[in-house]
Image (cartoon, rainbow, N blue to C red; front, top):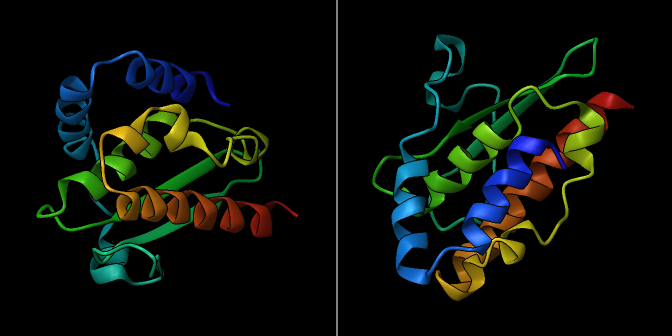
Length: 139
């Protein structure tokens, strides 16, 4: 797992439940703006398992560095928080590091105790789609 993501996981895992919700709200503001060419979800894949319209796109550079793009409405702070966590935690990561992220990431963070099972399932689907896109481009 990339060191930045491991740090985020540890912070969440060690936080009390009421603090976890505040931390999620902070990460919902950490989603970078989309480049103009991706406005409106152009060239992005929808994660249909999410209750909220959520789109993502990944790019694997020749040096195998992964860049992630996320689009999720501001009215969905919990779902946006997943994007913020992945955006910050995977910044500068290689394809191999992204693919090594554990599939149970959100359970390791303790989110299963703080948010609804539907949200955790959606978060898992986001990670699965992201890893699939990286795997397809890296092979």
